[in-house]
Length: 259
Ligand code: NAP
Image (cartoon, rainbow, N blue to C red; front, top):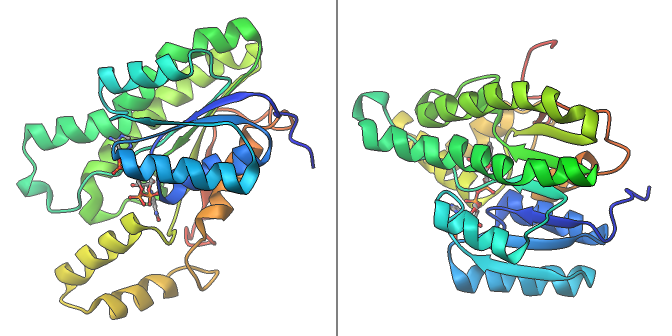
């Protein structure tokens, strides 16, 4: 299927590794010009080289912290009129809620709620004026089924989810869609470190914890980042113009509910 987005411009956050890089790769394969962001210069440049080599697309790496005003300004300077935004960065640390002070909560809100809110604020009116926009926020399955050691994530992402529910309905008539993509277990560095943290809390080895987590997934395996990247690219397609304000799980059937 031709997604009809060749020549469009995208900004993809947290894109030197894991899910963000996979989203950038899938969009680039569709002929989208991608501006990719991560904090570590060598890593984002290496990711840009890989995506260019694999797709032939125009790729602009930006080394910036997407959770700061200065970082977002640098990204928008590199891509002032994006048609597509994939809001993504690292997740907050795991732990016990009794140990988190105000600073820990503010950092989580900055990273997993406000960065996306401000990126939407800074770009959505241009999308409305150009009559095309696709915004995908990578959140987490924890929005539907909270993970206790990830309380900072559960809380901050729920705030973003509530904001998106409102604003997505306001902009839909201009062919601007905003959706949240909710990953379950994907085999990335972040996922490995969460499994290590769970193993420590439960006094198990990493391999034991990994086997337990795999057994919780109906598909019997962790997801490949490319599977999420392809879903993201579809949500950015012309064909997905009637999908908005949704929280879309991609978790290999782990979530046990009917709805
Ligand atoms: P990952 O493998 O750790 O990759 C994170 C990427 O984001 C890296 O490129 C990292 O590069 C970049 N990054 C982190 N903080 C950033 C910042 N402040 N500004 C710009 N770039 C930043 O993580 P992942 O597994 O792909 O996860 C992506 C998101 O999905 C996270 O929020 C995670 O919590 C969420 N999620 C993941 C899973 C899963 O199974 N993997 C499940 C549910 C939710 P630098 O460090 O160089 O900046």
